[in-house]
Amino acid sequence: MRVIQASLVRTSADPSAEGAVPLLQDLLWAHARPSDGLEHVRARPAEHGLDVVLFVHAPSDVSALTQMRALLDRVHGPIAVHGFTLALP
Image (tube, rainbow, N blue to C red; front, side, top):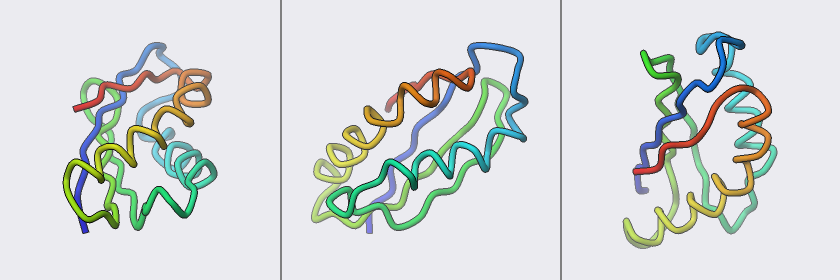
């Protein structure tokens, strides 16, 4: 299992970071495909918005990052609608 960290930066005052945690987790799972290898998501509020840790089944760190970039690209639009933008590692 590989671990990928990402940050979501708040682009508006609404919603609060705490209230967005379950929303973000739901969006990630809703857009995940079996080929992404997503096994677990952990998100927590941070000063800038949200910190996200993605646990990924992948043969290497490079593969895990590639898989998660594909997932995060798919979920970028819905996240933006809810007042956040992605800051990739």
